[in-house]
Length: 104
Image (spheres, rainbow, N blue to C red):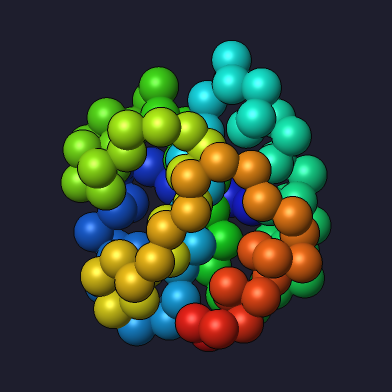
């Protein structure tokens, strides 16, 4: 299961060198609900090797500002504190998995 990414732990998570995948979402967002099971499945598959987190845009304005979130769902791929790629909108599980493999 994907853990939450919060403003309070942003600095700690960004300090890591390993791949961090953040799904920016909101409870009221239809496409976010469609993407949620895919993110959860991949979080379970990659547990221990890739950090996959969910960030509720309603509760974490600092994170949204830091990452320039304008639309949701948005997935950010972060390594060594820097955004290396992003995807806006829904995505098939195999396509998201391919992006994770590319950067891990």
